[in-house]
Length: 546
Image (cartoon, rainbow, N blue to C red):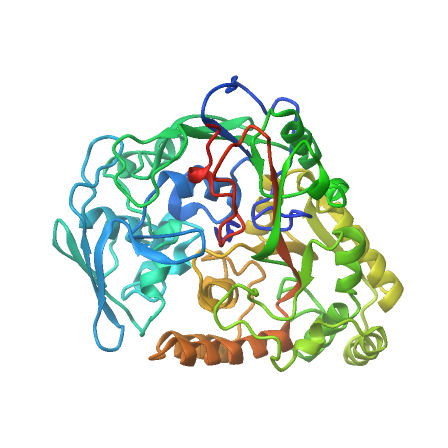
């Protein structure tokens, strides 16, 4: 997801595959004949990491992970939350403490019960810096988080803000008010873990013991991840099929052709070569509606001449203004997107088209040159700015066009830097090896502006503790997000998030490009349930070939 950031952190793959998890297709992707069966075959990339919920912030792992693990709450296709494993999630007066009661009878696929400790130990494990989990920052508002960021930890220390009352009850004490918490716990990182996980996390990641609507059948690396229906699942999302097999592709055009041929059932993207024709293609079922995914690129805050100071801000603003987003959408994406004017999405509560600073996201070549000249007056820059992306995800046409626009409209030396696979690309981002700009994007983990803002640009999510891949840090932004989390109403919170966004629109830690349509195709084998959810992902569990 994309995720992922995306989160599912990042946890989506859309027309130019610009998210935290975008793969493409290869000839050995298919294995096993599912013809005549009610198993849905779905497009995917090879996960960056083993299938451990708290270490998954891209969609290659997030898509199967989301079907394997049930959390306290689940979301319907429109993003509406409902209790899943939770019986109730009750705040105190100022939302600094929550009492969580679990439904009885939930079990992991190894037959052991899901208890309060299944959550508290799992959350503490993810939060503990010793365990180096990518989603650690999601737990930063829980008391005791800072203590678990210290050196010299063993890895089994627990968050002091979590207290087990009995097998089905625990309390959560926060270090600040957090009105989004009852929604946030629907994110994959908040999944419970069985006791067997702690005995051998590495083995668990290869064959997880889960509690969701599906369980793992097998994972054949770089080929497929096969899930089958979990007969013991008693939750909200009862599968309409017998399983979902995620097939790994390194070429998205090959995946599309497999859809046409009936060898693949669904993909949540449309390769650039087919964006003009997919809606009228009689060999596929097409889908294209406004979506929640934002596509961006990030320039690391540590990069000389691009730091979060006056020179760096001028250069970032100049680059943003030198990009003609409407032209990219029209010429490269064939209209299957909307130009970005802020950092969340049109489907996000609190979205606004009138934020101060959004002119920085509008094409203005003369202003761009003026700002670049002002930056040069501070410190002359004559280097080459590279744009990295994963070559297996269909991003090439977008980044070729961006580089050409920057050369033409700004007169700078820009070049693309394709990296062969998504996994290699994300590893380079994770290890802070990027020496220039790199593609990013976000598929939301829960329907709140907080997910697009705090989780991507807060100090708490920087330095490898979350999905702040550019390591941007601004205390004023952090403070406004904290005030928003403590707000007594959603409207008040959204006003504060909008103020925080106005800081981002000035600093531009990432450059918003466009909001991807939820676009994809399904094979003619799919008879019912084909739709897309609030994360721009197919409704896998609803799909059926019967």
